[in-house]
Length: 338
Ligand code: NAD
Ligand code: UDP
Image (cartoon, rainbow, N blue to C red; front, side, top):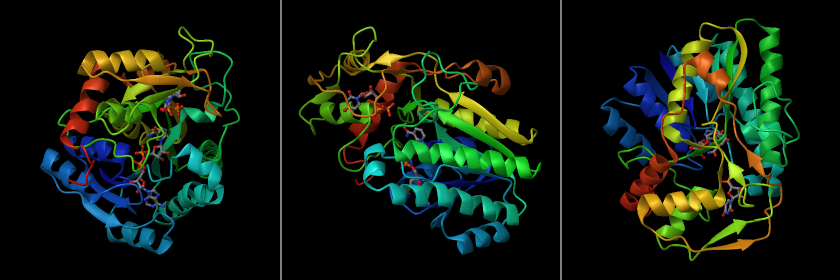
């Protein structure tokens, strides 16, 4: 297939672009590089031995989208482009809603005009809000996300359901990611957060690399095994593979399909620190501080639906996640700026 990957220079998009190329698909990446670098795409090309057609531009630019769709025959769109910093979304909700919601609608409009109806959307487990039981399966009610970022994901999901209901040609996958971490085993592509990381593993990595003094553990009074927050961490290469499986599935099934992409196993913050220390030999100094506002105690996926319908299971362990992350950090201490 000829696949348009929006946000394909970013963390998950670059790993998925590589998986697409390795599976024989052709890839066009549309990215405005607000949170990424073309170096990632050069490395994807080097790893796959195949070219990426890169367009430097914005999903909000409908003229550019029309040009992309009219100048080549696109079969499907994997839509990663978006802003993702939870804290920033509370400070700048308009920016988030315009980029994530209006951007997604602009993309769908251009797809419809071009008769392209296969779409895989990067959603998030945050759309479930704070469920009262675990694990979370796809038939759980979507809840009340605790921040504008999460609400932007839920809004796009709702819009896509209406769009698909209005026209049976749409084939849409809503992929609800749990906590993507890790890096490609080559150490050539990985997560490249600018500034102070928000997420746990990038923060641990910076402490291990000596760039930050200590990790702050946000609360140890949650109702979990050791009191710290529990999440379902999934290796980014497994996540990329899940996109290929979803893409292959939706082209044969009109409507909207929802799949959780997680490992189905929860790890607490303290367990993640131990796993990192054991896998890498680095000591992670940490200090327990107050809970982070908006955090939930625990969140992990029921993976049955993805197993049965997609034939997909996450294969990589938490140890793999730690080893691959650490290799990426050691090889690229300044991210793509080397
Ligand atoms: P990322 O920031 O690394 O990648 C997003 C890419 O989109 C970046 O390259 C950025 O430059 C680009 N982009 C942003 N706005 C754009 C626009 N208007 N036009 C064109 N390009 C634009 O993030 P990621 O971690 O790879 O996440 C990819 C998607 O998955 C996002 O939609 C994110 O919300 C979603 N998601 C991520 C996580 C996570 O923990 N990483 C979890 C759940 C969902
Ligand atoms: N966390 C932490 N210190 C940090 C970053 C995260 O203790 O510096 C905790 C956080 O409270 C949560 C878990 O690690 O329990 C995962 O947080 P992350 O931001 O990576 O993912 P999310 O909360 O969005 O699922």
